[in-house]
Length: 110
Image (cartoon, rainbow, N blue to C red; front, side, top):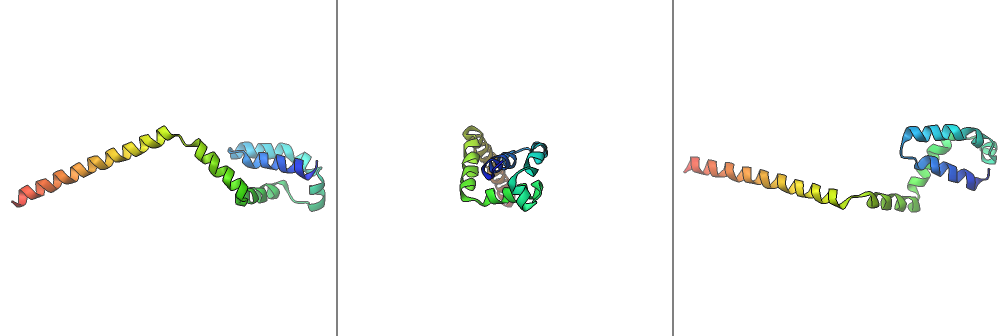
C-alpha cells in the first residue's frame, strides 16, 4: 500500500460523519495500515494518523471549501424560509403585546 492508497483510506475514515462507524472502519483497516511502508518507517499509530489527518484536512483550504460547499448544498431553502417566517410571526406577536400593554398604561395614566 503506497501513500496515495493510504491517503484515500484515511480520507474515507476521516470523512465518515458517524464517529462510531469511523472507529469501526479504522479498526478494520488497522492490520493493512501496519503493513504499509509509511507505518514501517514512522511507527505512528493509526489513531495518531487519523487525528493528524482530521486536523490537516480541516485546515487545508481546499478541504475547507469543500466542507463549506457541502454545508451550503445541504441547506433547505424551504426550511430556512419557514424559520424566518416563524421568527417574524413571533416578533409581530410580541410587538402587538407590547403595544397593547403600552395602551393599557396610557389609559391608566389618562
